Image 1 (cartoon, rainbow, N blue to C red):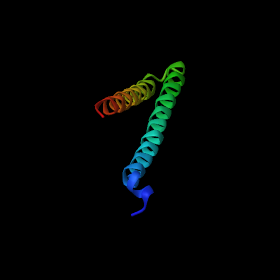
Image 2: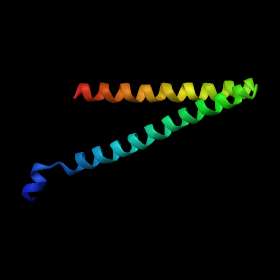
Image 3: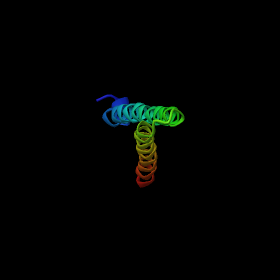
Image 4: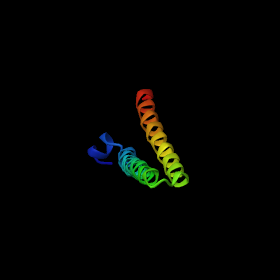
Length: 81
């Protein structure tokens, strides 16, 4: 075992890298779904298509709630360690 391997836990470091990458990309995708849902809901509302506007509005609401949950969970996990 080298000195660098004794100091750095490479498994934990790689775990942090891939978890951060996956959660960052996932959160960006969910936020993009929220933005698309809001935009489409507004378009359908202006065109008097209330059913489609309601569905897209619900999708946007769920996506925004998922973003909030992910942020809250991330902060809670960091606060525990």
